[in-house]
Image (cartoon, rainbow, N blue to C red; front, side, top):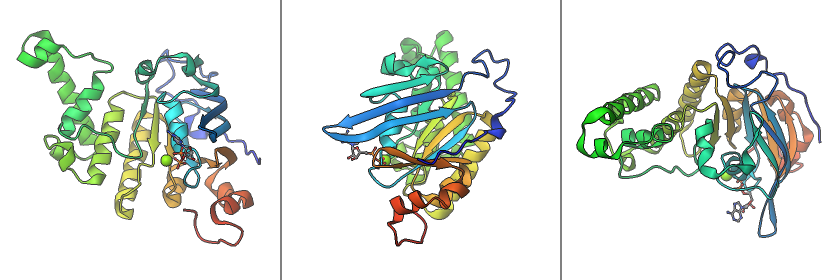
Length: 285
Ligand SMILES: Nc1ncnc2c1ncn2[C@@H]1O[C@H](COP(=O)(O)OP(=O)(O)O)[C@@H](O)[C@H]1O
Ligand SMILES: [Mg+2]
């Protein structure tokens, strides 16, 4: 495999992370080694490795069935690996129970949007906030006491997130009544409610019109500038990935085929062959 080193210049000397007491600069945010997952004989991911620094953006591309969603499922603790390690700020995630992973600051979105359809956009975001702020059941039911103030605070913060995503005006609609693109934005707001330092996005622009995709990527770029969270974005929409991600991994049949900058990936013969076959010339699917 052609391995290309990458210096994440945009994350160096990160002012927001320093002094936060969260991690020493020498420990990467994420260290993955030998990560392997099989499904009934199919190796969905084989011996995958990754080192990701605080605030870094990685794009993961590959044809259908390459193992991209499996990777997101593993990194977010939705499924367990058959082999290998995932260390988040030095802590081995594969030894933690699943419900503890969002609390560490790892949030994700789904390739097929998963919202509570009958809850409003605002409620969908507020539910996610209970990971850090367990709800006070009585005060939620009867609307009084200190818990009530907390619910009001959560509501205001959820509203602010919807505003950041440009959908505050849709806050009180059931999420099932929203357009696909707006549901995606609710899902991202919900992920941001976990105050993640690692955001995992599984095909965030799938099913969007090109203008919608572009607007969403602009928005994600702004959020990244403001929040400095690391992002792993899985996609097969090449122009989107190339624009958003300074560093790419290419998966093919569960194997890390290549890594590098968009430019390096574009010119890598192995990648062209995996995506297009020997004769292809157009952009990868
Ligand atoms: N829950 C599952 N059960 C069985 N096979 C699965 C499951 N999830 C993924 N796979 C298989 O693993 C491979 C990788 O799938 P996936 O990670 O969804 O690929 P991608 O997201 O790149 O399209 C495929 O062959 C897929 O059929
Ligand atoms: Mg997928």
